Image (cartoon, rainbow, N blue to C red; front, side):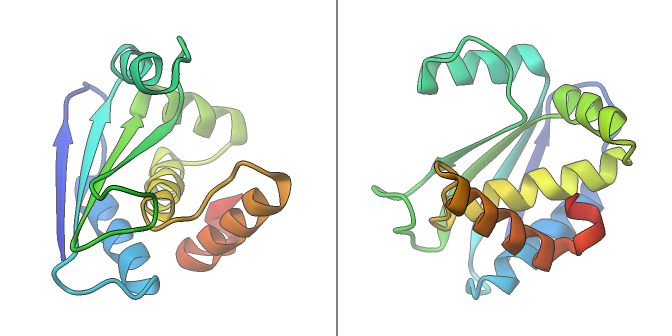
Length: 143
C-alpha cells in the first residue's frame, strides 16, 4: 500500500504512526496491496479554504475526504485524498483529554472510511461509521 503524506503545517506529527494507521484502515476494509491514499496535513486556514470551496462552509473542520473516482465508494487502487487540520485536531484532543496522535488516528481512519463509501449524514450512519473506526483503531482511541 502507498500512503503519501504531505505536512504543510508547523505542529509536530508522528507521520510513521499516521501512515501505519492509514494502512491498518485500508487492510481492515479489504483494500488491495496496490491501494493508494494521499494525506495532507494542514492548518485551520488551509482547511477553511478547502471547506469553503468544496462544501460552501467558511470555517475550519477537522477532516475532509476527496474521492479520486467518479462516485463515492467507487474506487480503483488510487482512492483519493484525506486532508486533516492538525490545528483543529490539537484543539479537539485537548478538549477530550487525548493525545494528538490518538486524535490523528481517529481522523485519518474517519477520512479513509469516507473514501471507501461510509457516510455520516444521519445519526445511524454516523454511529455505524464511529463503530467501524473503533474496531479498526481500538475502542479507547475512538472515544
